[in-house]
Length: 236
Image (cartoon, helix red, strand yellow):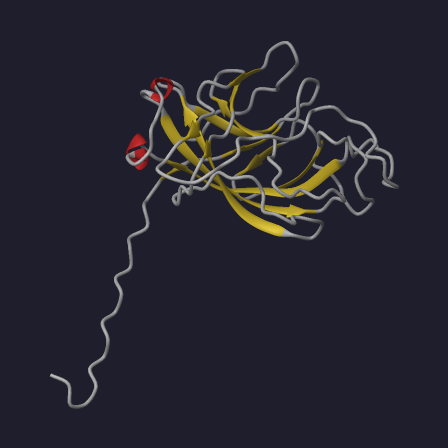
């Protein structure tokens, strides 16, 4: 079933669902929870050009941002920007390539809080290219899951050790201009709620850029069996 179209998000009507933006704990490892930019606009202190009618933030001249309020499909590229906590402006090419619907069984080895009871995990896979001037090392993008028929956003979960099916981690180190990455984020949709869209939303006053499409069922990768050693001449 194709999700319904996105609801435009405004200051007085949006809620970010923090209860299911979990930091999941496993057996070992250290991890950091999400951190990132704000929705405020403003200069980044560099020689970047001013914002233009087509660009809502001051990004390099070669960058043309996707208009606020745009609805894209899975596989479509959007060019989006936001202001980091250090007031530098980030800009990326962002493509939501696929959304997979999983079950809580994928977290058998993890400790889940009671708030996750009945939730449905979604794995959002995307490709990202840094097209701005800001260093996005370990940055977290303001990308949320918008619930169908609601004005509620679900933030991505994070992990304190490696979750192989969908790492849900910040961007890599040294993610400077020209660098690219393939990422996967985990979102837990509350019981009885459904996915509406994947939403790039920077904060109050910003009209979200969204991606819609049909999720597919998550299929765990089968472990490949190692091939046995070939027998040499004279072996039994």
